[in-house]
Amino acid sequence: MKKNAIVIGAGIVGLACTRALATRGYKVTVIDRSDFAVGASIRNFGMIWPIGQPDGNLYERALLSKSIWIETCEKANIWRDPVGSLHLAYSDMEMEVIQDFFATTGKERNYQVLDASSASSMSSAITGSGLKGGIFSPDEMILDSPKAIRNIPSFLSENYDVEFKWNTHVNKVETSKVFAGNQVLEADEIFICNGPDFENLFPEVTAKLPLTKCKLQMMRFETQPDNWRMGPSLCGGLSLTHYTSFKQAGDSLKKYKSFVEETMPEYVKWGIHVMVSQNSSGEIIVGDSHEYGPSHDPFDKSFINELILDYLKKFARFPSEKIAASWNGIYPKMLDGSTEIVLDILPGVKMINALSGAGMTLSFGLCDQVIGGTYSK
Image 1 (cartoon, rainbow, N blue to C red):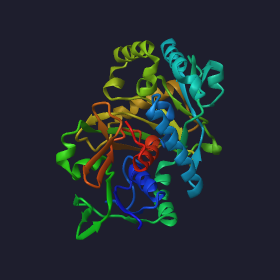
Image 2 (image 1 turned 60 degrees about the horizontal axis):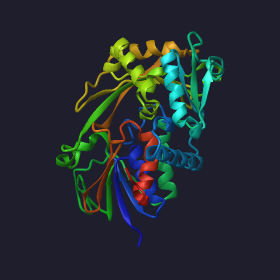
Image 3 (image 1 turned 30 degrees about the vertical axis):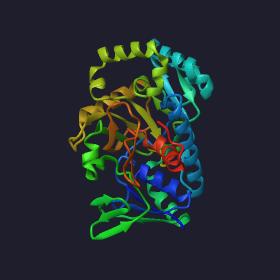
């Protein structure tokens, strides 16, 4: 007899969990409080970003997730762009970090360290003045997050035994039962994937976890003229301080971080590093910042956007830099360095959450491992 599962939350983690269950023969009911996904899963760069993950379980999980994304995009006719990534260096310290990082892992990952001329040739957006070089990775892929996340539910419903219950708020969960308004739904297994709403169910459990929320600010430039494409996603040197993979650079990264802390305190205070990607419509996605705490001001801070744009000008310019939209997103973040929550709360009730900003990169792989029984921290 086919097993039944309920997934609470239709963001990227919930969709990844649903896909992992459905492909293994489960009948799945997905419940979401909105009419469609509106949270951090659509408020991001659309980056599938293996380069940001350190060697070991997380890097392998990112590659698994990417392979599932590719398969899903092909089957669901979802746009993707395997453009890779280019981290740029404009100082000797940044270049030293790149070279040390490459020495520890780059050859195995098929990366290329580029001089200034070779790096500049990869995109007409790159600012040539002061450029020292960069590191190119072919592994990164771009999705149009709002379109992808909204297309996956219909793909799952049409191809598997999956039903979505939108605009439905879950009040309570017990073993084998989910209470949603006047409805009581039953299932063999229940998965709670409710992102920043983690305190709504089992608050006594989440209150004991080293868990907070992160607010980020981002912007989108209008569609670029004449079908202009930027090529690989671009990152400034500050991104070297953000992603845990670059810790493998060792002392050179520590030295660079100290320099940044001394010379760019506002960027450190607001957790700013600057990256750009380009979506299917030709728009440029720019960001971002990181503010941590249990509750956040719902309004964007204009000075943060100005800091982001000022730094962006140091390494990239675009045919059109007219801002079409700005926004913020909020996601759960573990404070103890953990990269996710996978927690059995009751018999048959599991929480999967807090991928700490790497949901697009890791969710498909993580949920496939959890449901497939191969998960390990």
